[in-house]
Image (cartoon, rainbow over all chains, first blue to last red; front, side, top):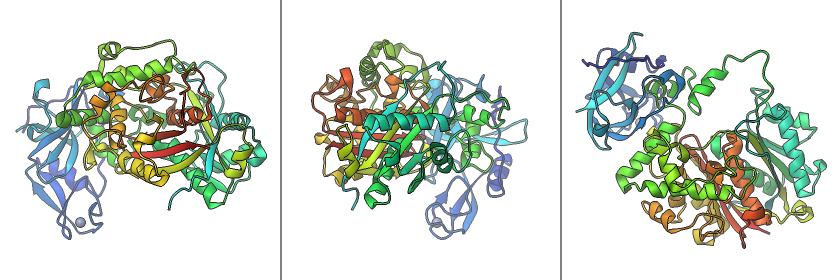
Length: 139
Length: 400
Ligand SMILES: [Zn+2]
């Protein structure tokens, strides 16, 4: 659970048949990642074919979501008009312990918390649109 | 393998960069024709010499841009190419043209990018909004960016480049004065370029650092200013180069590297694709960084220039800030960089922004760079950068 509420609703993702299990997982507060049955590498974002070996034998696995901030920025102007009112945006790239990286927002943090290498964990943000976004917060 | 250096730039043309364009409006077909005519006049060649066309997407046609343009210009061509590499497009165009010429399928290729506003559409297009909102990020359904970048606000360019800079800072430290000096030195160069958007408006390191932070650590004066403009480059074979009235700038080396769309997934955000691209260009030309008289690196942000200098081998990884601090990057300096002001000093005319670097490299070799002309310029390295360091290209130009 989380205490993150959004003052402005960002543009929502529109899942595809391939990505649906990822978003469905988030709705249930589970982080689902694909792992390749052939080369055993982790794959993100969700695909039909492994980005390491192009095998189509990808299996969904639940992971803890523990990781660290790979990089971040504090956007002091809205990055696009739909984000007006959300600034400063704490935009980050998080690297999970499985090695994959993803775009996210750091929630429940102050500016001084934002550092490359800081440990983070998932923060599931349920929106009024019935979509769940994957933010992260300090672990 | 690679280019033998038998194709040369012999003519260039560009529009003045203008932040608020108030002149007559023309379609891309019309601007393309005008830029082509100007480049031919500059070279002292004529339309009948042309048998190749290289373009970007045009506003008037979603598909078939080369055919639309060739027909409009009344050209029958043996090489028809459209390049879609964002800011790396202009450099990508030049080496493709050179390769086609060296293969012998054509003798003269016009590479042009219009970037002035077109006439106002009486029937507004509903798709223009997404383009305006998200810059290089696609919000189309099914695009990975629409699902995994846009909802988190990592859209357009500023946040991506800012995160590259933050990662660099965490690994190598961050001297903001060194980054600001890149913008200030290039702004100095723009004072000798009447076509620059910031002509008559110098800016010091302190001015850059006093400007608002847009996305930490990037100040607004470390980010390009969009403007109207346009540019064209004429690439020809040896026989036509001998007929041209300009000193030819032969394309002796090239390279290209694309690693991802979002920078999120790059193996190492601080080691950029221009590394392999420049290495390829140097190896093909048989040159090394110390042989280069002028560097015209793509400069959407100050961090782009810093990483391009490091990854192209002018200094070691992590030494870029010391390097730019110790060198004078102006046209009077010991290490001239973006002698026309770059896009930071001259403005970014859409996709034609990167063409300004090709044009300036060629002009320095031709000896036609006016008040900013280097006393000696026989060799130039020009780079292009598309997306968020997604795709980068490099060429080496040498005077004939
Ligand atoms: Zn695999």
